[in-house]
Figure 1 (cartoon, rainbow, N blue to C red):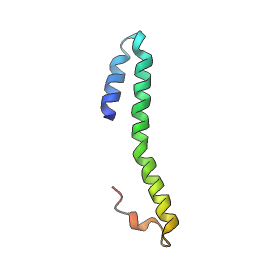
Figure 2: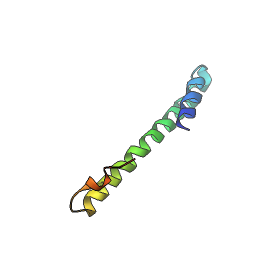
Figure 3: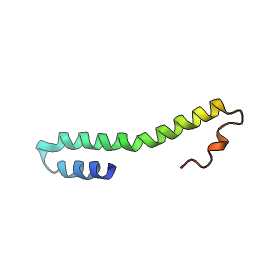
Length: 62
């Protein structure tokens, strides 16, 4: 879905009147790209807090 937001946003930049909508679609795509790393970071921090040996148990973090 992220690729769709970026493609549609790119097409909307061809016209001056739709460039604002294109900017918003680029922003939505960027936020979606950020979600997975934030979830991973939160998981690692949580595992580091509850596990005495640290987040080594999450080495297979897909």
